[in-house]
Image (cartoon, rainbow, N blue to C red):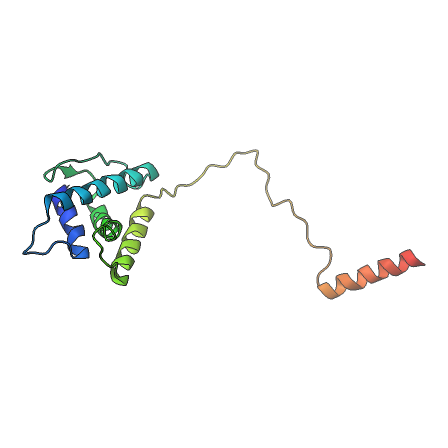
Length: 149
């Protein structure tokens, strides 16, 4: 499992708030942690990260699947960038979108549906009466002329 510190540090590194030499300030850590909890709670409501429980400390374990960590880091970085007055690069935006789409697709359950026996077969539509627009316009003209006679 992944810790809160790993995810928060990863998101902070993506937007340039944290580097290998510079640690994250405690206040900045709390801002990113709060946004992560909000984002993952939203995702849990949507069924994307159903096992998420809110976390409070840097040593807490984030209970999500390992395949979701990259999507969390990149999307968290995108959400936090305006707070730290950082630019969201097209590469970061692309990574956030693609990892979120993959995570979202992995949670979709595509199963066979059993239709009831009483469901009628066919669409209920009949073949069109007129095969081409020219044929139909000729028939309409004939009907009009027959009505006028």
